Amino acid sequence: MADETIYQYLQREGVSRRQFLKICGALAVTLGISEASPLLAAGLTRPTSPTRLVAEALASKPRVPVMWLNFQDCTGCTEALTRSLSPTLTDLVLNKITIDYHETLSAASGVQADENKRMMMETYAGQYLLVVEGSVPTGANGNYCTIGGRTAVDLLQEAAAGAAAVIATGNCAAFGGIPMAQPNPTGAVPAYQLITDKPVAHIPGCPAIPEAFTGTLVNFLVFGKLPELDDLNRPITFYGTTVHDRCLRRPFYEAGKFANSFDDEGARKGWCLYKLGCKGPTTYNACAGIKWGGGLSFPIQSGHPCLGCSEPNFWDNGGFYQGQSAPIGRPTLTAAGVALAAGAVIGVANAGVNRLQKRHADTDEETTESLSG
Ligand code: FSX
Ligand code: SF4
Ligand code: F3S
Image (cartoon, rainbow, N blue to C red; front, side, top):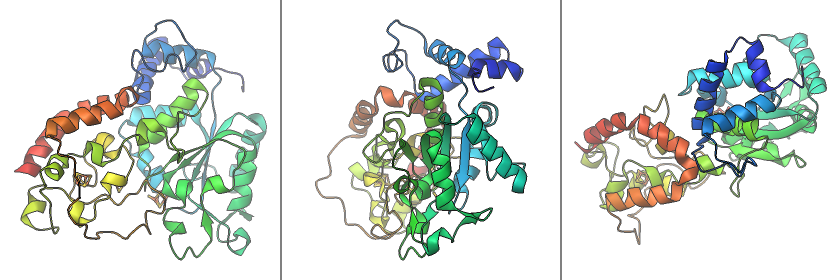
């Protein structure tokens, strides 16, 4: 039923109108839609609520099927997604609305799985969204990664030819990741180097933050296009600010209080990890706001410096845990000033992230207190 709208599809799945509106409200939060923001982007000029905006879109747009291909990776991106902050929403978006073919999660295998994929490519030619996880090896004529006797290069290019757009999730698919690290024995390349005629959104991270992926997917479902991207093709909603901008250790950075080893007094007191090689100041990602494990924590909160996992060449980029001298020309913002500055930069686009963060504010406060103890 290629022409069926998302709402019709959900009705067929037994979802009531009331449940549908609840789903639309949850999707609006994921998208970070506020009362005022993307109405114009959606082509609407009259005021409408975020829930209604999403509801109107899902009631008028055809369902977007998703094909998910795995190449050179650790499957951490899929793993993270299946354990995301919003299991109900993720289940809904991935299992009920979108994913028609996922190599790792597929119940079918072998010839049957191949046949499912072929049918999907034929039925939804030019309409489906292709998700790529993992880098693609080009060495040895592509033979370092073959599935069903065909190379990853071949499979990727075939699937991309019929796709409406592509999401490369995880650092491996977006920038080459660990497989492409020196000496790059398999000649790994990121997906975009082999797909030149389709829009490709990057959701880097090792692994990608599940909510950043789901939010990008939902944007495509609701607005029929990829969200606004930065110069590395990352959605600005999730990659518009650095980890440092929202870091809970930032007041210690401003105060010049740094841990010098992993077990000194500064580390125990939760001081800034800059001198232990933290790359938060140059790393654009949403983990300091959304966090992991249901908003429980993220690397820096757990005592580990940021490794820059959402940036290109992060594995080779200057090494890990390299001592850095105290930052020079540090802006002398107060903690309140930091909060204001971060808020101004993040703005409307990050409303969803802010709401998620607010939901976990109590946990944050407790953790900050214990870190400062
Ligand atoms: Fe790469 Fe995704 Fe790192 Fe793993 O598969 S981004 S190795 S966490 O999970 O691609
Ligand atoms: Fe910035 Fe890293 Fe220090 Fe946090 S721990 S304030 S991200 S340098
Ligand atoms: Fe990655 Fe740094 Fe966040 S290592 S998960 S971008 S704290």
